Structures are given as C-alpha cells and as structure tokens.
Image (cartoon, rainbow, N blue to C red):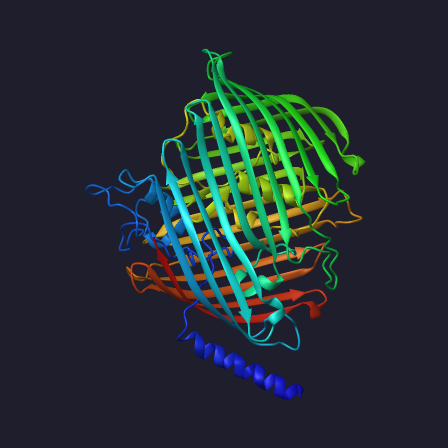
Length: 588
C-alpha cells in the first residue's frame, strides 16, 4: 500500500509539472514577503510608464515628454516594484487624484515536498486563486498607497494546508491643517517565519508560516516659535497580531515560545532650534514616554521615558559633531531586571560626502547600556545606493516589527525602513522628517532595509531582549538591470530566558532582475541564513525565473525554487523543489 501511495504521489508530481506548462500562476517578490506579492509577481514586473512597459490602464498621459525623475532616471521599468511604479504614476501632473487598479490571478505550484519533511516526502500540486486592488492618491490633502490581495489555496494531497489568506501594505500621509496638523497611517499583512531568517518563497511555504498583521497611526502638530525654532508634538500607536502557527514550536532542538499580539505607543515632544543659540549649531530638546505591552506574555509591559538635549554642530558643510545628554527611566513590573534610571549621553559625528548621502556614527548610553549606533546612507551614483545600520536596543519581536512598518517608506524595491526612534533615540531624532525646518523635496528614492527582511531576522516569540543588529542593503542598476544585495547579523539576548531563549541569526540575499526585452524580464537569486540558540539550522535557497507580458495588462510567469534546510538534529532538515507558473491580470 505504501509503495502504491508513493507511486501515486510521483504521478501527481509529474502531472503537476506537465500542467504547469499550460496553466498560469504567480510568483512572489525577490524578498518573498512584499507589498507587491500578488499584484506584482516579482520586482521584475512593473507597469511604470516608459521604457517599453505600458502605463497603468487608468493613468492619464502627461502632456508632452516627461523627463525621468532622479528616483528612476536610467532605470528600466522592470527593475522597480509595482507599488512604487503606481505611486510615481499617481504623482504625474495629469494624473487624477486617485488611481485604482485591480488584479486577479490563478496559480499552480508543484512541489516534491509539500510538508517540508526529511523523510516520507509527499509531492503535491497547489491551486491558488487571488484577487485584489491597489489604490494610490496624490492630492493636496492626502498622499498614500493601499494595496491588498486575498487568495484561496487548495492542495490535492495535503488538504490540511488549504486556506484563505491575504497580503497587503498601506502607507498614507494626510494634511489636516496645512503646515500645522498632520496624520500618518501605515499597515501591512504578511507571512513570516517563526524560526527567523525569512521565508524563501511564501507561496510555496505558506503552510509553515505565521500570518502577521500590523496597523498604526500617528497624529503630529508642527508649530513655528517665532525665529527661535520649531516645536513638534506627536503621538504614535501601533498594534501587531498574529494567526497560524503561533503557539510554542514543537520542533526538535527548538525552544521558541509562543507569539501573541502587542501594542506599542509613544508620545514625543521635540523643540528644535537651528542656529538659534550658536551659529551652525542645531539643538533639539527631545522628551518622550513610551509603552510596549504584550498580551498574555511574561514580559508584561515595558515603560520607558527618554529625555535628552541633542546637539549637532556643523564644522564644515560636509562634517559635524554630535553630542547629547539627558535622563532616562525604565520599568517593567514583570521583568524587574530592566528597572532603573540614570543619565543618558551621546557623542559622535556625521559626514556628508555629497548633499544626498551621510555617514553617522554615535557612541552613547541608552537603556542602561553603552554601545555604538551608526547609519550609512550613501548614493554613489543616481543608480547605485548603499544603506547600512547598527543598533543596540531594548525591545521585543513585536516592537521591532511595528516600528519597521510604521516608519517605512516606499522605494524602488518596495517598502524599506531605517533606524527607528526606539532603536536609537539620537539617530531617530536626527532622521525625523517631521522635524525638518525645510522639508526635503529632492524627489530622490528612499534607501533602507526591505521591511520584510528586517521584520524577520530573529525568531518571533514573546519576551524582552537586548537586540544588537547590523544590516546593510546595496542596490545598483547595471545596463538597466537591478542587482540587490542584503546582509544582516542579529543577536537577541533574552531578559526573559524562562519563556524565550537568546538567539542569533545571520543571512545574505543576492538578486538580479535582468530586463531581457521590452516585454520579457528575468529573475535570479540566491540566499543563505543561519539561526542558533533558540533553534539551530541553516537554510540555502536559489531561484530562477522569467515573466512575459502577453499584453499591456496580462503577465505570464515561470519560476523554479530550490530550498534546503540543514537542521540540528539532522532529522529536522529537508529538501524542497518547486515549480511555479502564473497568469496575472490587471485592470481598472
């Protein structure tokens, strides 16, 4: 009977591969979890006007030729994400205030190891039907994008993984009172790995993933105080909650605990004085009170107040010194080891090799620990940029995820984030766009770490940690083709070891999205990640594929994925191959 079952599974596998040659399906983005997940199978599929790729179906043509902006000059449309392209389209002078694009797809995924097991591998063919919409707006009172797609998955063999689910991303900025009162809103829905290290292909591995939802908003009030400075009063609240695979992981050599919902909120008051006290000296009186609360978690509620006078003195136009001093207070009734108060201080500097690049390095004491923090945002050329960050903060898995989403911005590769205020109060204040006396309007595309990558460095579990993270992402356009390299190294030292062990993780992703012709683009990527502590494993992955525009709104996609996990013990590893073919339609 067992032999018959294996033979039958092989028949399903070969039948699935044959069917994939004729049936259309979709593939995910370069970083597996992105806002473009279904609307754009990869970064290589874009509806940006120009460069041989047709505009969105409801975008109005601009009067006369429109030169490319600094964000996209020289880039082929196949190198940028669909959401970013649609945001650019809505910002065209002749575009209507609101653009709406719908998308639908049918997917078939053939895999030789649907349950991701070392032995008794079972082949399967998954059918996936999806539908969604993207709304972009660029008006005098509101700028933003909202994209959401729901899907239903059906397996032939492993029906236990059949599911309804959704993916989405939202980012908006509203002007309630021009020049004075504003409101920002952000949110996402995505799949992440409980084990950390990211998911290599979410539509292949979604049954093993945990669905995450993040939503938050921030009203803030800006007022000029005569010729003295600028006052900004803000409040930010965000929530993260989870579904599927949220209890303690029942895996060999794994101590990863449960993950539950959490709320993070912070109130801030900043009074910025540029050149008021001393010429070429920017001073910022920064006061804050925050609270991070986890539901049904031994980590309880962390209360923190940080109050500091931060100064940046410009020695030359390209170099400045940074110094600060203040006072902090920390309290967690359930984790008394963090309780305390005392002085905080910072000393560092910033270099600006050109007007749109900076290197900031700071050494200081925050969260009762002294360490470095640093950020590099360097635009080597209009088509090449590098972003790197290092922080040492007191945080939770949920707080990191909430902060990354709420502080995210859309770039050519999708949503990216930098260093948040919770990770480094000094860099958070100096980077805060709301505190700019003259808002930056260069039109340059933002740089940072892909949100899907930064949200999933480490295992997702309740607890409180001292988190040291170094991450970097570089992007360049070579002969119109996008090449992206992302590296990270993260260490989580648990302050609640009874429920959440310490862990460390490291990884790398390299992707190449060549534009092979005006209608044909490709994808090649390799990745590696390693986790230790809470779980011991190494994951290697590679993928190759292509997509073809059958018409202005219809895309055919083909992709192959190889995923190998070496676990400890070895019985916890697996090998998986998957073939995905897709047909996706966009319409207004």
